[in-house]
Image 1 (cartoon, rainbow, N blue to C red):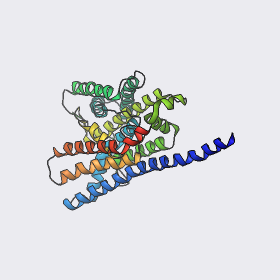
Image 2: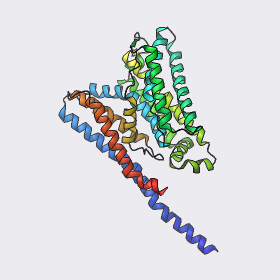
Image 3: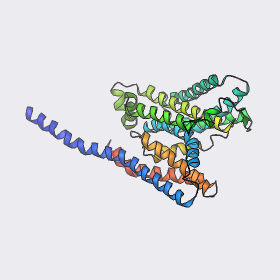
Image 4: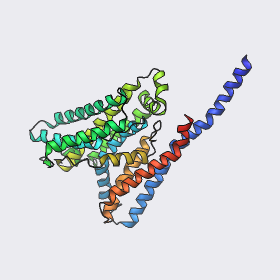
Length: 336
């Protein structure tokens, strides 16, 4: 009786070892590939433009990419659960508009910030409820949310920008700390928190498990519905934070602030190596993916190319990233 059991236990690690090595290769390979691509893009624009590698331009990239980095960190969790959030750009725009109006009413800016973060989380919770508890696909729920929230933002502003007088609030987007733009510090803190949450806590393991095999995680005693809902709460809150940072930098609130923003976020995440099929994500890859998207946009402007090329390039990046996701991760999806 003991012999068969011994043989089984000794062969199991041998069978599992190739799978573990393959998973490690896929995780590290995706980060390595985007790192190489990022360096290639930097080198390309360094030779084609004179201003790209200057310190002012690098700091400008860090300042402008902060909202993208903030939301992409949360979107990594969303996509790892095999979900998606198309409403982040609309939430950013609505927060920008409402925030500007509340500041014009002379409400204290710290209270306004808390209200906006709570409002973004509430929108995320509402969408997460329909996704997690009602079983409606995330694409449908957040696509509907995109239309509703964007319509509210346009209705509130009438399509016009709402100016904000310079104050302590605008320093959130325009200020400096130790020679680095303050928005970059905010993005760095969010990325560090996201990395720890995703890689060093049970919640991060639950997020990955839900994307890989939600039923198995549920049978293990994890409240998968609550975990999924909370992921969308985080996404909504980070979209609101991005709206706060962007509004402070621009000095005005606008319903057009987040136009096309969700495409940039998704491009950053999938370009960074997070699987659109769920079950595999990387915050480090997302960081590199977001910086790559930001560098491409900045480099095209410095190269004096048409600004209309930016959404075209972003769309191509998304298409190629999705294709690579499908080609690379298809085998692992089938094996599950």
